[in-house]
Image (cartoon, rainbow, N blue to C red):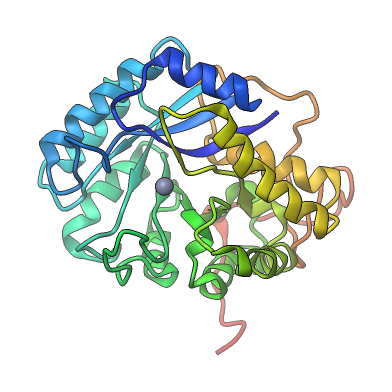
Length: 312
Ligand SMILES: [Zn+2]
């Protein structure tokens, strides 16, 4: 089972294109983002995002067992809360992608969108880290997303492991684990669509696995559709080579290839179930624990997590 949890649409792809790409790449499920970086679509043009979400709705409809659509929303737009609700309840999309450019996650003006995302219990993917196109990444530091812990039913993924702020991202992710929250229920998980240049990748992945474990990490190619399956396969190969070098075991790899994303996407309609799917228990030391490994280990739901001053 393989889920590519970060695939960009451009508006030029067809459903057949996408399914062929997934088949050629050996990917079972693609998490597709509505177009916002290609010609005719822009984060600064809310009308274009509405068209983008409508395009994505048509693209995934009838193929929800393999195509999971995330709408793109600019939370600064006054209509954004309604657009988000429309995308989920009417267009049949499953979650949202948001890119902090010109707004911080803790800004008062953008909170209404997160209230809707929380009410609808949505998976949300955020760009986090530097931008490669020259936009300022100053809005996208991992600690800025901590304000969104105020929305306990929203499940968030920070893309690119927030490079170059990977240490900061790992610290943000660790907090739930320290407090005994099971990996499936944490506020933040991270995708391994590499923002880090090759020279950093092994070091970044080693630290993330050592501190967070595979339970908070998921694969995403960050490819732009339409594209040949070979491109997805190549990016999958980058991660496989690193996992080989770090001698990561099979259960941990399975978690990265599909388990973390499945938990993030909870209740995705028609997503095929795996027979060996079992919830992960809390892990204070970060490594993957399956339910039958340590039956006595406590796991605390996020809602009941007690914040206490364990350090200064
Ligand atoms: Zn991307």
